[in-house]
Length: 361
View 1: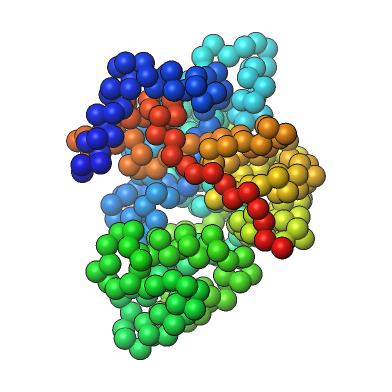
View 2 (view 1 turned 180 degrees about the vertical axis):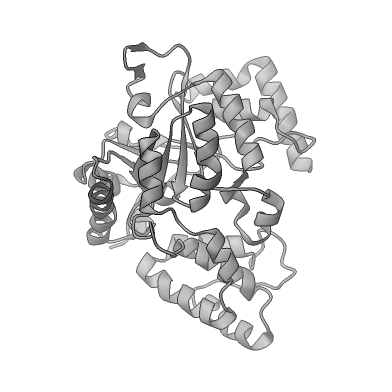
């Protein structure tokens, strides 16, 4: 609550004084397109947040508020048009913005797609191609759910889990461990994802699930889009791009796997959709010089990150995005705040960190 009050107060001050616009110019964001990114769309945020990563969620009602606010202030355009900054047949009248969704969850089709169609807004969805049309769930979601269950596991499986986690240099913590503490499931999820290659992490997740069981209902909520859904969305003006083949953090992977994740996913999409694919989103936003070069070699024209910096050698392959979720635009009273949303657009609250600058051998 205190943080929200401070954030709302700063937002009002920045917007009223014009300081947010000055900051935008100083950081080179003036005149650049604003690209926003979402993940899952749900009916009831409070209910879904009990067993989901909160910052992955936005309710349909809040998404509608976001889209209305953006639509009143920006020309919302397809990704193919946003980078050149020109609409076919003439210049844009206002600053440009693009709406994107990562990971390819089915709820984007069920809840966001109807909103976008009703408002006549184009958008883009970046999918994990190995999951499309399956009952599979991204590995990071399975990891988070397993750690969430492990927090309340009975003594016997919990002891085994603690040995697994401690072998990785981490601590499980207890059920009463505060958010962000050593045993917080979200913190552990991030630490494991950012330390282990995907092929090393998968058996850890398998072991965790064997110990604590699987929440089938929670996994079902996270089911991916189907190919038919993607084809329908594409016919209605939704751009379909790649988010790799298996949602691997490219800066941790070998060169061989980077090629499989980038070129392989593009080929998957083009074969199933029968159309060229030119857009790519880095998982976790992470990139380095080698991964950007691989993305270029795979044939993508544009690629997107959530990190603060860009690669000057590849400006169109390191385009910045703002990750938004249910609470990213809340004011002091816990409701949608135009001032806070304005500061998101200006980059005042742009807090994503720098990406790793190296890849493991």
